[in-house]
Image 1 (spheres, helix red, strand yellow):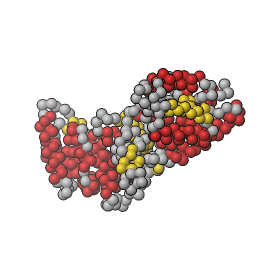
Image 2: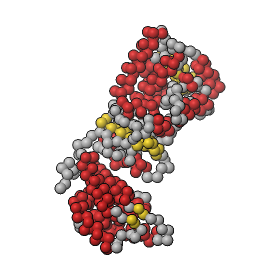
Image 3: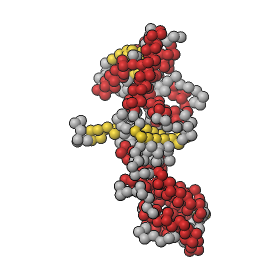
Image 4: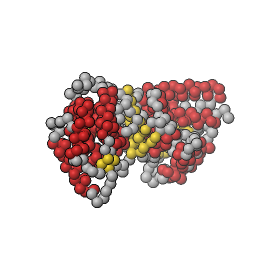
Length: 439
């Protein structure tokens, strides 16, 4: 009987095929072992390719024992070839498989007697078939047609955090007569940098943090910029220093950032802070703002991190690397997918938590996401859109519309991680002030 929740919606059918295929592949790989024999490897591979083609030709008309033959051939072949061709099974074939499992003993016995299976494959019929049936049964629970992910509202969460910060700042002022101070240094007149700095200064004003504005000309010598950083390091009313990046080409960014006192490194990128983040049992004074915001979104959305499989897509110093270290500190099992990773789709599909920070527009499709997974999309990419006045729109690294049909939680772009980055900058500044004020 066809499950009632299945419809003609092509995206849902695609997701159904994907999940069924993945469950069948996992069931097969758990019970079938391919023994490598270099002397017969080529002939075995040719036989499996031929068998796979035979299965594809007979896909339209399936006999009772054919589904068993199909998962055996496709499973062993895809396992050897390191591909998931089994995911290309049609939905009708998967349904036929589920309906014919009751006759598996007769069909499988016939298959064994035929001698058509590769002799280098060790077989376990009962567990393979039971696993396949369990996979189909789980599909009913995994993908109802009206499923829609919970949207993680980064703006609302960030506003809550800002309100908490404003309350603590007010307490500091009332008790000690001092407000936290954040020095924001900008070099040159890049419009995007000016926009970001203006937003950060406005956010400081809203929560009661004093903003110290340092605007330097484009051609400022590197030595002069470093001297200004040293001056801010020595100022007791400055509790955080932010140098807006990128800097002009004649200035060494790494050298400048290293000169910021670790006690005022509210961006969290000082080598000592990153080093402590990477070490078990050590706690950095500050965490990088965007990665910290990602973890905060998960926690405030009630998503468990401990013991979960997490995949970070991207390995940048700003997001990918530090967020993977933060997830490790939260006791997740972490995999980092990057530009040289083979078969990233399979790795992402196994994740309970996905943090996308690759910088590629809509790279991660709905079919890559495990049903019920939490997806945090850090990417901000401009794509052409003639319907917009600006001529473009912002999208993330995840295909949001597709992800909503599969994921349990997902962040939008814009309105997800972005507001959290500024909120975490304010939180870091407050924490830096609390270490000094009242001591």
